[in-house]
Every structure is written in C-alpha cells, then in structure tokens.
Amino acid sequence: MIKLYLKKLIPCLLILWLAPALLQAQNNQPTREDLERRKKELQKEIDEANEALKDTKRSTRESLGQLRALRNKITLRTRLINNINEEINFINGDINTAYRDIKTLQKDLDTLKAQYAQLIVYAYKNRSTYDLINFVFSAQSFNDAVRRYQYLKQYREYRHRQATTIVQTQDLLNQKIESLRDQKEKRAGALKTEQDERKTLEDDRKEQDEVLSKLKGREKELVADINKRKKDALNVQNAIRAVIRREIEAERRRVEAEELARRKAIEAEKERRRKAEAEEAARRKAAAAAAAAAAANNNNNTAANNPPPVKETPKPPPPPPPAPEPERTPPPTRSANVLEATPEALALSESFENNRGKLPWPVTSGNIIGHFGKQHHAVVEKINVENDGIIIATSKGAAVKTIFQGEVRRVMVIPGSGYVVMIRHGQYFTNYVRLRTVTVKTGDEVRTGQMIGTAGVNDIENQGEVELQIYKGVVKQNPELWIMRR
Image 1 (cartoon, rainbow, N blue to C red):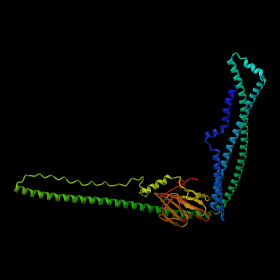
Image 2: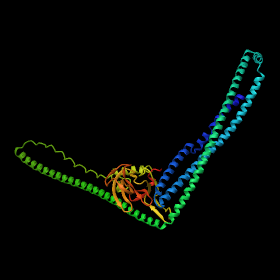
Image 3: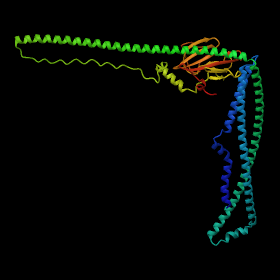
Image 4: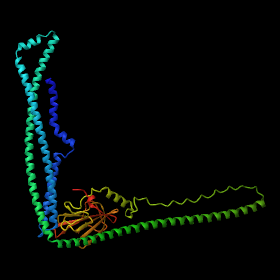
C-alpha cells in the first residue's frame, strides 16, 4: 500500500512543480520575457521623448512641439505603468502558486515522515536477527522461504527509497520557499518602480497643463500660424497635382503617339501589299497575252508544215499572295491607367503595392507629430487641421531617404514649404516636403534608402521636420498604412 502511494506521489510532485509553466502556455498570455522586452522598448521610447522635449525647450517660448513631446511622454509612461502592473500580476500569480505548492509539499512531507516513523518503529520491534532468521526458516517450503527472503530484501529497499523521497521532498520544499522569497523581493521592487513612475507621470501632466495654458494665451498667434500652414499646404497640393496631371497627360500623348505610329505602320504595310498584288496581277496579264501570241504563231506554222501536234504542258498557277498579318493589340492591363502603360511601370506599381506596410521610414529616427487626414488642433480645439501626408519630427539636418526605388520627376521650391521632391513609382508618387537641401535632380533614378536631402527646420518649435505624402495618381493615400510600424 505504501509502495503504491509513493508511485502516485512522485508524479504529483512533478506536476505541482511544472504547473505554473503549463498554465502559462495554456492561457497564451504574454510571458515574463515579453513583458521585460516591452518594458525595455518603452523605456527607450521614453528616453527618446525626453531628448525631443529637451530640444523643443531650447526655444525661448512654449510651442506645440513641447506639448506634443509631453503628451507623447505621458502616453508612453502610461503604457509603461500598465506593463509594470501586468508584471506585478504575474508575480502575484507566482507567489500564490508558490504558497499552494509549499502547503501541498509540507502536507506530503508530514505524511511521508509519519509513514517512515511507522516503518522505523516496526523495524525496531523486529530488530532481532533471531526473529528474521526464524521468519525465513519457519517457511513450509523452500519456495516460501525464498519469497520471504525477497520480501525482507524489498522491505529494506523500500525503507531506503522512503528516506530518499523525504530528502527530495524537503529539498523541493526549500527551493519553493527560496523562490517565494525571490518573488516577494521582485514584487517589492516592481511596486516601488510603479510608484516612482506614477509620481513622474503626475509631474509630466502638471507640466503639460502649464504649457497648454500658456499656449492658449497665444491663441491668435496659433490661429494665424494654422492659416499660414493651410495656405502653404494648399500650394504644395496644387503644385503636386499639377505635376501628376502633366505626367498623366504626357503618358497619354506618348501612348497616343505610339498607337498612331502603329496604325500608320499597319496602313503602310497594307498599301505595300496592295501595290504588290496589283503588280503581280499586271505581270500575270502580260504573261497571258504573250502566251496567247505565241500560241497563234505556233498554229500558223503548224498549218503550213503539218507537223504532228504537240501538247503543251500547262504552267502551274502562281502562288496565292500571303495572307495579311492580324493587327497586334497591346497586352491587356489591370486598369486603364496610362501611368502603367509600359511593362516596367506596371511592374514597379505592383512591387510598390506588395510592400504596403513594409516600406522604411524616410528618416532614421523620429516620431509622427501630424497624422494623415482631418483632426482637431492640439490647442485650438475648435479648429480642424488636415494633412495631406504625415509630418515627422526629427533632428535638425537629419538625412531624408527614399522609401522605394523610382525616378525623380520633379524638384521644386515652394515658399513656406521648402524643397519638394517628387519620385514616381509606376502609378504611385512619393512626395518629400519641407526639405532644407536636396541632393538629387529631375530624371535621377533612385534606390530604396538613398539620401535625397535633409530635413527642414521649424524655427518656432526648434526641431527638424519632414512631411511624407503618397499619391496613387491624383488620389492621396495614408502613409501610415504603407510604412513600417515602430
């Protein structure tokens, strides 16, 4: 009975030891390593936000850049606190599991010790060698004596295993107690970190309220800046769409010219064949007339000399003229878009589309401060602002790089928006606005990640800026859906 109990007890102990890992895998929840990695990533982003805030604070006045940097910090720190709370919940779960395991192991250890004590008492009472020999030799047969001897041997081995199991259970219990102590220390450290982060979060919110209050006192100035930016953005949009329309018109004229040249070539081929057929008909007619004259002359000579008639071998008919080749039609395209009229342009468009959501950022480091489309202003909430692309804040003079290979179709300067570089990718156009300098020119072939210029500087907010726009034909696209997520 005791032996059967031990066989069942050891697997149970193993299950108790592995239970936390098994439950974690079944619930499909983030692991401790995931939380730790996410915590490091958030801390890194917070450090970057602090650097961005330092740059904006170098300005003599409060700016939207400071407000955006503070809001970004608050968002990131809130995520960090949530991450720490998840980690604390994880630790609490481990502590509760450790408590249950310790209680179970202590109970099992007490049971094992009690049973072992009973074995010791029984062994003590039957410690006499005479009693053991008498137990063996009192058997009724030799086979019975062998079985009794085997029983005594197994009994000794069982006592040894019982003692080993008690020692192992005691070691396992000690490990669990040590693990519980470590988990409590981790929880205490996580709670302290969470309290420190909450205090810093409150300080950030107070600073945000102060900056917001001061900015609202400059509402007229901000409204004037908003109107100026709207006007500059409209000028950029009109210029870009004008270039795209010219591209479409140029492609349409090129396609029409190619089609006209193809039709002229077909008509010229038809005229050549018609003339060849007419010449062939005239040649046949002349040959037939010559044959008739020769036949009449032969008949006169035959009547005078009465030669035996000779049959003439009929000439084979001339071969028919070659059938005209069917008109070649251009291969069907997926749409009637003239910007994809060539195989190269079509392949480039398809490649651009296949990289949707995987395109690189135009700057090495930065964050989006202006999202695509219409949204409320950060300070003057009654005014909506609309962006044709995304505005990325970066360091001053940061290198601006292409997000996909293509051809530079236009480099222009627009007052209030700096340099604008337009790159064509089949029927798609990527536009890089607010550049301070450029290193490419119209007609250049560029590759993915190639530097095309440097980011412009927003003097009011004292930071670098670049705007990325993506057009499909003349239709604006949301660049956040095309570039990689950070």
